[in-house]
Length: 125
Length: 170
Image 1 (cartoon, helix red, strand yellow):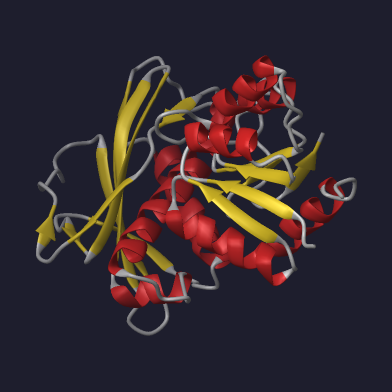
Image 2: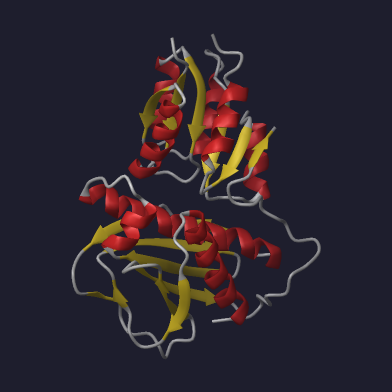
């Protein structure tokens, strides 16, 4: 069975591009359009192998989503990598503290995104 | 508008569209503030700076950078994303000057005969025309109100952002 990756981004076209990249490499992709939807998806999808998440989104941003996952503690979070236009060291540091495993500044290079997915999903069943 | 910011917008636009295999000639324009069919807008604020950026693109520029086609809504969304990526690139470069910018999420729209107010006499505004191969055309319109204490001098202690596309694993 293919590994499942959640893509959280408020841009439908980014979700499409990331989704095509991942599904072309054999991953199953599920989508959420903001941090609140992403948080709900993480809680309700225990077999997620990884999450790829934007930072600036309406309702709940990506770092707030990470912090909410970390604060809950009632479930284990899959590895999360941030995919964003933001590159401020303070934000990167906050995401790392909240449990993020990686950071990519958009626009992404498909080969590097897939390399990250391969590495971070290696432990998933 | 300070020459440093003008140069950052020019080089950031060139680099961004290079990534999408759309080499563009970037030229600053004066007077006309006409928008192409698809447009996106973002606001930004930071210590001593605030403003808006508008990016517009015609159908050929959208097709060249988002070749999978998609719906009208997708094409609008994509130009909003290009606006987001251009401002993000500029925001990451101004960190070197000690300026940290917070960005809104993009709003995108489409239409015909869209024109922004002529602000050619306003020194806080600037516009650029981007021409790619074939008929691909885009425009960028930046308004940045910058307080006098912002000097646009880079400092050794300034923060640096990672390069676009690079992967950092923790």
